[in-house]
Length: 390
Image (cartoon, rainbow, N blue to C red; front, top):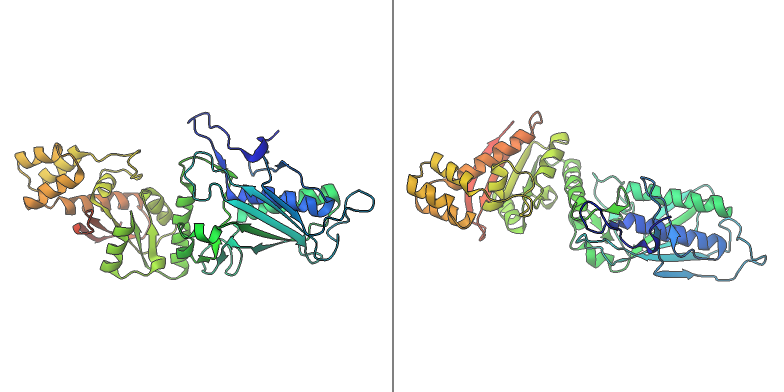
C-alpha cells in the first residue's frame, strides 16, 4: 500500500521527512479527476505509481464536477462522452516534507475534460502554471511548463483509469497552482523564459530534503537556454550582489546569468558536458576561497573557509611571518582579506587564480575559458583572475 494521505515519509538515513514533487501531486489530482469524469466518484485518497514503482496515496483537498448527474444505471459513464462540457477538477496540497521548498503547501489542481477522438492527453497551463517562451528547455516554445517526466506520469495515470472504467484516454488536462504566478517570482522561471507561473517538476516524484535538486535543475536549464540563445559567455554567481558586479564588468544579458548559489560543482560539471566558450565565476571572497581550496559545494554546512590555506596563499604572495600568522588566526575571511589589502598582499587575486584552477580542473577536456571575480560584502572587487582556457 502507499503512504495514505500524501503525507511525507521519513528518510531512515537522515531522520528528515521526504516529500512529493509538484509532478506527483499533479498526477494524483489528474487521476482523481479523470476517475470522477468517467465514474462520477472521486477516489480519496488516490494512489499513483511513481517512476521507480512506489505507490503513494494522496488525500484530495478540492474536488468538483460541472455536472453531477449520476448515470442512469448507476454504473460507469461511457468513455469521455459523459456530456458535452462535463469537467472534473481535483486538487492536492503539496507536502515537501522537511525540504525548504517554495511550493510547499501549494494547492495543485487538475481539471480534466474530453478531448478530440485520437488526441491522447493534451496538456494546458491553467492559472499559476507557466508557459515556455524560450528555446533550450525540454519542451517546445508555447507548451505548458509541465516537464517530460510528470507528463509521462500523467499519461500513465490516464491510461490506468481509462482501462479500468472503459475510457478512450483522449482528454485535455489543465494543471493549475493556486497563487503559482506569485510563487514563481521567487524561482528561476522568469529568467528561463517560463512566464505566467510555476513549472510542474520532478523525475522521481519524491523530494529529498536539502538535495536542492530543483535549484540544480534550474542551473542546467539556465545553461541550456543560454546555449539555445547563442550566448558565448555566461556567469555563475553566488548571489545578487556578485551578479550585479558581473553584469557591470561584462555587460551580460539576463539569460547569460546563472544563479549558481553554493553549487559551483553543478555549474562546472554541466558546462563540461554542454560547453559555453567562456565562464565568469563571480562571488564573495569567503565562498570563492572554498572553491580555491577545492570545494565544489560552497554551503557553510558542507564546507568551511580554511584560514590555514589562506595563510599559505598570503605567504606565497609575499606576506611576512607576522601577517601570515594573523591571516591564519583571523576571525573571518573578510578580516583576512582586509589585513592583506592593508599590507599590499594580493590575497584576493591569489584566491581568484586558485578558484580558476579548481574550475579548470573540473572542466578538463572541455573548451571553456574561465575568469573569476571576487567581491567583498559591499560589492567591491577584491580579486580578479583573467580568462584562461583548460
